[in-house]
Amino acid sequence: MRELQNDLKVKRECVDKALKDFVRITFPEELYRAARHLIDSGGKRLRPILLLLAAEAVNPDIDLTDILPAAVAIELVHNFTLVHDDIMDEDVTRHGIETVHVKWGIPQALIAGDTLYAKAFEVLSYTKTNSENMVKCLRLLAKTCVDICIGQWLDIRFENDKQVSEQEYIEMVENKTAVIYAAAAAMGGILAGAKEEEIRALWDLGIAVGIGFQIRDDILDIITPFEILGKDRGSDLVEGKMTLIVIHALHHGVKLDIKPDITEEGIQEAVQILQNAGSIGYAMTRATELINSGKSKLSILKDSDVKRELLELADYMIEREY
Image (cartoon, rainbow, N blue to C red; front, side):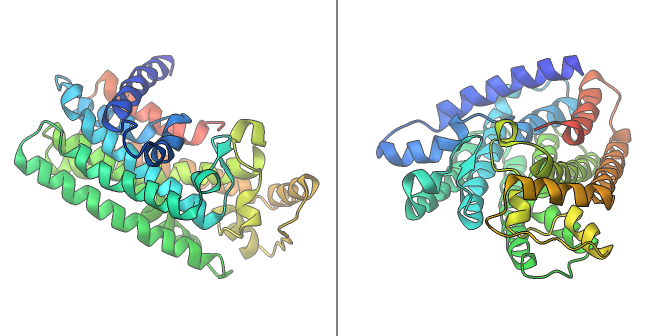
């Protein structure tokens, strides 16, 4: 795991530098400051790193600088979704700082998010690859953006539907969260010259990783304090999000009375109820099952240090503490 952490650090630094190069503060400066606001606040860059690792796992000799623009494009799409997601959820903080719409206003935040979305496709075009692979990546990234919108639509709809099933939740998360991980892994494979069955395996890994990541996120939302998570604890409960934890609890007769003005003590009581019902443990078990299923797909790739890092990264998604 230590080698993975070192490699993540190196790749994160490369992605951060490329983000500064491709998304410069230019006229009008305030627009680009708003667009870069969440990017500059930090982040693990897991999605672009997944793309780079997937490419190396397929082709150890690939020059990562050639495909770095594709990794940046993935991160720009991710940040575009964060800006819009914060508006819809009325969140006031992310990464421990003000959200874009709180700092600049909703109309300006929408424009900043749209700028990131458009910029992603511009940056992707700078990837050094043949025309066939470029078309595949463009088509895949565009479809991914549509799928994310579908997932967000379902997420909002579910807030008023207390009969959501576990399968419906999984389908929603697959669209809203997992597809961008899947696209990152698959695009890495495409750009490295992977065979179709290898690309499919990388896509399946990404889906599993993404769903596992979201379930872990749902858990962290209610057990992690603001100082570590960078946002208010229990925000999903307050917003009425139908997470796997809540779905399990409701299906087992647990009644949650969460009001918008709930106190920290109230959140703690709700967490204890969910713990006692086994709902948090159940969610963690499902996340582990999904990750293990995704990891099994990589049997198609040759064993290597990078493949081992991919498997460790999958585990990290559900072991992380923030």
